[in-house]
Image 1 (cartoon, one colour):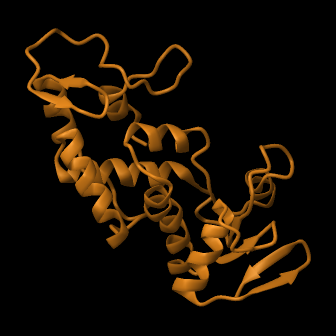
Image 2 (cartoon, rainbow, N blue to C red):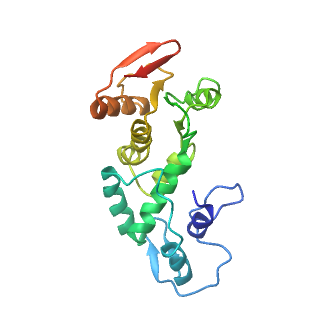
Image 3 (tube, rainbow, N blue to C red):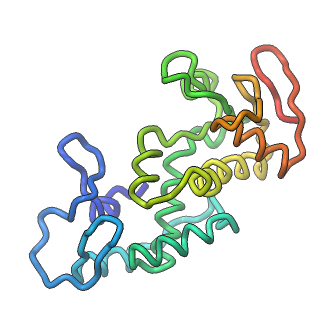
Length: 207
């Protein structure tokens, strides 16, 4: 994500995390707009920076129909422009999808981190994978999104990106529609792409 812009809206704290507190080092000015999500008041300089930041390169992720309700919600609640919110969502997607040049996309369970996690296995195999890490819960809470909205905007976008770019999707855990995060991915692939899953070696492949 464009860290300079994020720090204008939510500066990093002492641990390097993006804070929900107001911008630091700014000259006090009369607030013009209130972010009702965080009780943060944007002064004119902060709003001008957010609204007029350079256009993002949108080649990696196209705008999706599933993004529209979340974009509309955040435009209303943050008082930023539609373009600024769309760029924010696009940046989160770009930051959360790794190894985009890989032949395969790996899906699986986190297993609490460590060697059995899909992230670790994807890194070792050089596979593309989606992971927001701790930013998942932070983003969910900050923008008051539920699990369905988070999945529709971020997880599903990564799967669509993989499918549209001809990547082979495989799972390192058995793909079951069990209501878990992995189950949501299985259900999405079945419903939208009509796939079946075939075991080969250590992986289950979406065919």
